[in-house]
Length: 204
Image 1 (cartoon, rainbow, N blue to C red):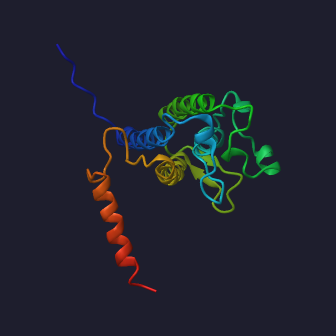
Image 2 (image 1 turned 90 degrees about the horizontal axis):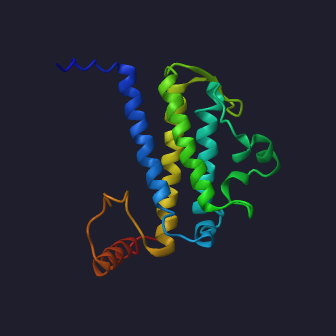
């Protein structure tokens, strides 16, 4: 006889939703480097130097830091990530791959960070306290806020990746299974851009 399913607690529900959105944004970010060469993934595509591989490296360190170190469960192999000391020497150190690193290796680290931080979310209460030494205000915080902060950072950089990839080869879309855009062919997209350009040109 089947046993009745235990009701999900409110905290477990919150964790499930938070992890769902983290997973969706992570997968979208990783999708943006699919089928790219080392050169293409590393190439700086805007004057700030932002590049697709660097965004993934950055988020691996961000997620392991906020959802690991800050809540007392540090990443077990810190040499794989960018340390605070390295950032003091080079503030951009987590935004590009060195010649000793590879895109495949960076993706592997990032995926292992996902599993690590999700385990931390599972075992720690959302009101677990943490102190963020690099925050200038309200450094005493909770795991819940840290997850939301990480999700905000991740979503922002996934948006960057959307634009960088489109600049490279025109690839667009929210995810593999849901482009979340009208199903226009090239001619229709060009007409849409022309329409927007015509409207914009009316203004000084």
